[in-house]
Image (cartoon, rainbow, N blue to C red; front, side, top):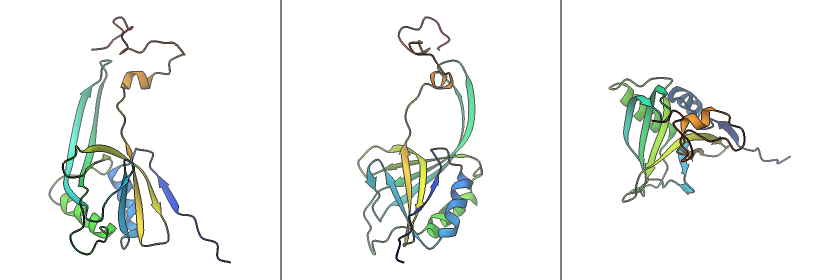
Length: 175
């Protein structure tokens, strides 16, 4: 029987931690890592240009404080200069390991990708899923990060309710 196996998909749903992502990649060290972002497939020459370890302390429009750690991988989508192969998972991991030797990368930090082509603005993405097929590549599906009003999204509002940030809100706690 020659039934083809469907790819294994590991869903992150936009909420990947650095270590969770690295653990999912680990068994696939010999495969090429292909990124799919914003209706594009990254070109084989892509380059990890910077790894940022950030600590954020914020106050949202409802006056609610928040804090979290984030690891941001900045990736430039450029053409390959030589062989045209995608970066291997092993090389990607070596880059992260090298950074971890010089910077403190929190294991449970939220993982964010900033991706763009030369001359274009960077776009911000969350890790959506890893698709693992039997071939030579693993596909990282990145999802655009939408802008949100956190207080409005935290509350379940009945139909017709006015969010704190709408023009009809009257002193409902917004900054």
